[in-house]
Length: 300
Image (cartoon, rainbow, N blue to C red):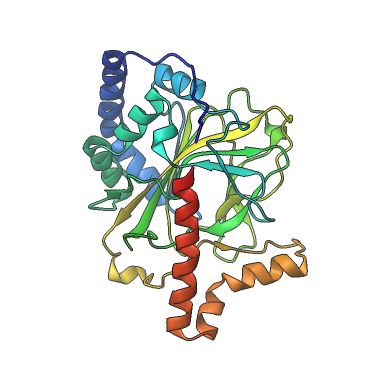
């Protein structure tokens, strides 16, 4: 496949390494403060960090972000995440982007994340299945959902999401806020504007309801850009009570009207569907669905 690559200049390796070395040191130095914010946050544990990356690194990463018309993207469709594009294959990332992903998966960052979140023995996903670069075009949305519970290949438990937004001069009226909803999915308790170099780290669980459900109203030549990395562990604490395995589950908000087709599609992936079919049939359906997603992920 012919791939359109970014022609953006690459930050010299020694400069990149020195910038990221200071970044990791700074993250570790703030870990105790961030840990207090993470634990106290509602409606689920999270922390918002502005000016997350060194400015020079963030600028270079944005410069390497592929245009939505290039052929490296996997385009998602449907009501719940229409207009969203995903690039998880690191072969198609520019030089600084690849270095940044490697650094965010490094031992130093993992130790800092463990200290901030209290989740021990974090494991990275080198294949970035479902993660990597994301962008959503004007009119697109990502409805309220909880993320899949286990890695499709390794069966590891998904524990943390790290999102870095890369949107310069992003206005309030453009929308695209990262919304966090309460456990009853009745109220949005927090909205975060996805501005440039803002990071959100949050715990993934059966009640971490999030998304940006309102269609983007940004100009047609702009997109909502982000880098998403997911972190895993072997099992969860027994007291969490979250042993049930599930795919990404979308939920209906108050006042949201669904067509019959969208209602059926959501119901087919819901937790109660799992209870209606024999376990062996459900596992087969889920395995087939994951294999389709994995094939699509490696094709781009």
